[in-house]
Image (tube, rainbow, N blue to C red; front, side, top):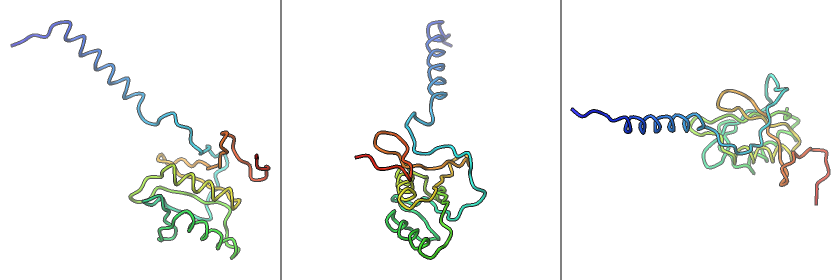
Length: 145
């Protein structure tokens, strides 16, 4: 039977520590998201939509592109239906992608309602449109040229 030398044992220990360190650092990257932790999350939402495949949204069982979703929201506003808060949740088979968040934040900014996203841990964050310079865009602020 072979015995392990001290050098082999120390190499294995260093390798194991390196794997543990990488595992501890894993998870979310440092990428900046357009979601802001909401301090005043409403108790209920006027509209709830689900993330769907191909960057579409599931709204009342119908898969919609971002343009179709904006049209559906515009119809709700024209019919004076409640449209001040929208919640985006993970779909049955689809995770929420950055494209979903970006499209909903853009629609929310244009149509002047608040958009929220339910993250994987059940935490709810507010989506805000962000200008190219990284500053949050306010609905009543003038556009920069």
